[in-house]
Each structure stands twice: as structure tokens, then as C-alpha cells.
Amino acid sequence: MGGVRRPGRHRSPVKALDRLHRWWRGGASAGSFPYRPVLGHFQAVGRNHADPGLVATLRAARDVLPAGHDDARALVLRQWLPSTVDQEDGDYDTYAGVSLLNLLADSYGSGEVVDDTLDALQVVLLADLLRYETSALVEEPDLLRQQVRVKACLRALARADELAPRARGLVPANPLGDNAIRDLGRDDLLARGAELSRAVRSVAPPAMRDAVEFAMLPTTWLHDEVMFIRSIQSFEVVYRQVARCLERATAALDAGRPAAASDELRDATRRITATSMLYRILTSMPPDAFAIIRAYTHGRSAVQSRSFRLVEQYSAPPPPDTAGIELPGPSLQEVYEARLATAGPASLGYLTETMRGLDSAWRLMKRTHWGITLKVIGRVPGTGGTAGAAYLEQAAARPLFPVLHPRQDDWRDRIA
Image (cartoon, rainbow, N blue to C red):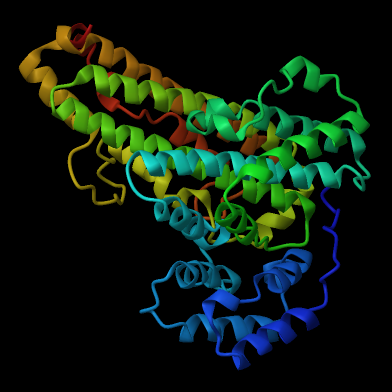
């Protein structure tokens, strides 16, 4: 699978260049930008192999796009263009289209509306991945490996309510169970994969479908990188939702509502536990394919994920030797310790257990990440300047709430 190319109808840049030059001559309006011809070329050859003339024109467009234009179409284009010209200075956000997807989530409103939008986005991301992998099943020479991947994608979408419980309306009723998916043959997989992904797409908001489409800019020509990017994007949605849960839990506890804080932590725990479905998809990555992808993604490591770091910082202050993100208030652990000192452990017993549950789920998720990384890349250095799998092994041992893992045994007596 590692050497399989994506379909290359738009391998030539001629159409994209022609449409882009027409766009320039026509006034360069954000609403008429020719996304799809440009995407076609980038997706066929990989952004790191895109035509230099096309990249130069896109860079010029990025540099002259007026910053004062704040209508929705200009905002989308402004967030998207940096990902097309990051061949030399790309980072994690431009690689995964994080800014574009975050813009989409925030454009619908605030509060619960953002939560609803993020969960809907999760389902649309999974549906698009299933659509792509199902279509690849037609041409994939390594049929067994591809069937395993499609089944993992189908299972994730069928059980999307575990990852995105606020988007139940997007997932068709009565999906296949795990056992039924396991027994599907190639033809049934093709039919069910196409059916389920089409059903989601038919009810998804057009702006969301467009954002998901635009956010797919692989650096290589490899089929496997599409799966990798979609998986990263799905994890980003999970991290952002968990960070929001932690932020609300902290506010609730600070206001003297530990039960409400516990509810938020249970929601976060369920979402983290459900990431096992995403890891099943990632385990289908062939080591030889990932070696090629890594060669083109230096400096774009997931350790840069702001949402991931927010989860850990909303939980507890970062270690002294770690650069942190400035938060608007204290972490959950800090508020918890203050409440523990004034109200006593008895009043926080249930909250303590939900904190332990989230802590355990988070560390298990990180251990799973470490295990898959070890399997796929071994112990080579990471793309973000880390020690690769060794760094992940160390990170997996770090708890969300250090206060629950004291070195002194007598602390356990104080929170029991």
C-alpha cells in the first residue's frame, strides 16, 4: 500500500494555473477563488511536489489578500492559503489544516453551538475518510490490508456517537454492529461504505463539506497520507472538545458545583476512550509508506498541537521546564486543591474518582499512541525534534492530574 499513488487526473498544473490566472485578472475576489483545480493538482502530486509557478502565484495571493476583508469567504481563503505555500516553513497547523477547521467550528456561534459544530465536523471527517478508503478498495492491490482499513473506518463512523455524541442526527439509524462489519466481504464493504458516507454527506452543511474538502492537502502522492491527515484532524476535534470540557469543569468547580464538573469530566472520558476506534485506523499504516511521509513532514509534529497542550494545561500546570500556554484562569487541579483544603476530601470524593477516570483514559490513549509509533517507525527521532517513540513513552507516563499520583503515601489518605 505504501507505494500506491492517488488517482492523478490533475497531475498537470495547466488547468489550475489557467484558472488561477483568470481569477487574478477578474479582480481576485475571495468568493470566486478556484479551489478545486488547485486542490486537484495538490492532491495528485502532493503539496511538496506542486508546480513551482502555481505555488508562487498562491504565495502572491496570500500576500496581497486584504487583511480587512472579514466576510466568511475571505476568512476561509486567508486561513487556507498558508497551507498551500508551506513547503519550506510548514508547521503542524498548516499541515493538518487546523486553522481552517477551527474557523469553521467558531463561525457558527459560541457555547453549545461550537460543541454541536465540532461533533458534526467529526462525523463529516470520518464520513469523508470512509468515502475515500472505500473508493480506494476498487484499485488497491493489497486487498486484505485495504479491507481491514475500510472496516475500521466503517466501524468508526457507525459508532461515531461515542466520539461525537452531539451529532447523532448525522449518523444513520441502525448502523452495522462490529460483528457484522467484521464479516463483510469486498462487495458488501464497497456498498455499505459508499451508502453510509453518502448518507452523512447528504445532510452535512455545505460549508462544512467544503472545509473538510479544502483541508486535505497532503505533502506526498501517497494514498496512505490521506488517511493519516484525516486521522490527525479527527484527533484534533477530540482534543478541542476535551479541552472545552475541562474548561467548563474548572468553572463549575470554582463556582461550588462539583457534580457539574464531574459531568463534564465523564463526557471527556467517554470521548478519549472512543479514540481507540481512530487508532484502529492508524494501525493500518505501512511502515514503508510512513517513512516516505515523515521525510516530507519535518517540523510538522503533533507535539505542536495547541488543543492537545490545552487539555494538559487545563488539567494541571505544566512542568517547570515546559513552555506553557497562557490560560485565562487556574487549572482544574489548582481549583481542586483549593477546594480540598477548604471543604475537605469527603465533599469531593465523586469528583476525585471522575478525575482519576479521565487521567487513566488519557494516559491509556498516550500509551496506545506510543505503541503504534514504536510499531510503525521504531526508535528513530521524531519530526518535531523530539526523540520519537522514546519521547512518547515518557509523555505517556505523565498524568493529567499529578496531585492524584503523589510520591508521599499519606496523600492518598487525604483524598480517599
